[in-house]
Length: 209
Image 1 (cartoon, rainbow, N blue to C red):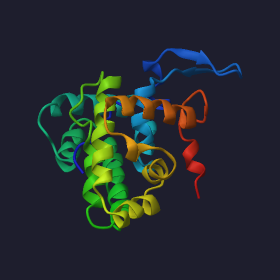
Image 2: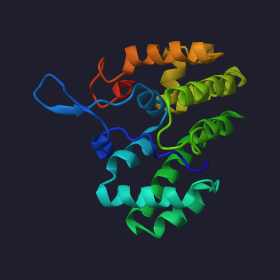
Image 3: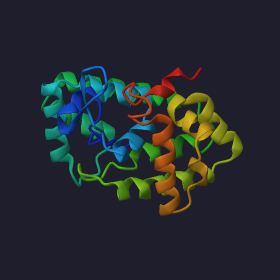
């Protein structure tokens, strides 16, 4: 798995990046762009936990390492070494995330592991200000990759990876063929899992057994 994009900027560590709204309980929460939410829904727990665990110093280390890595097509291992130049603690957290993701993917069947890695890599070269159109193009690519898997390979993703598996089971990701489909899909998942429908920090799908 190559360098993941950390420009998702959602949740606790990145709340300052967004306009805030009153959640109805007297607490201000960040208004997170829908395309950020949609992409984040495809992340598994190790990646989400890493991102929201970043304090201000760790976040700054990641930002500096990202600037150094821009355009260099670094592997996760190479990025980890770069990150270590700014924060040994953050490097350790990053390497733990990579190890946990690899462990989760270990028993994926056939080409499923390769496809999952490609999905996770999908926005690695995006600018931090990636757009809704960028995510729609990514969704078209994701759908094509998943559709080309055998039923056994897709079933292994559903069985092993809680977040991607739920999206494959309960949303129309496999029906996305073009940009119009992708726009409709984004609206679908926002109705099911978006910030306003489920204010539980974008992760209502954690309840899946």
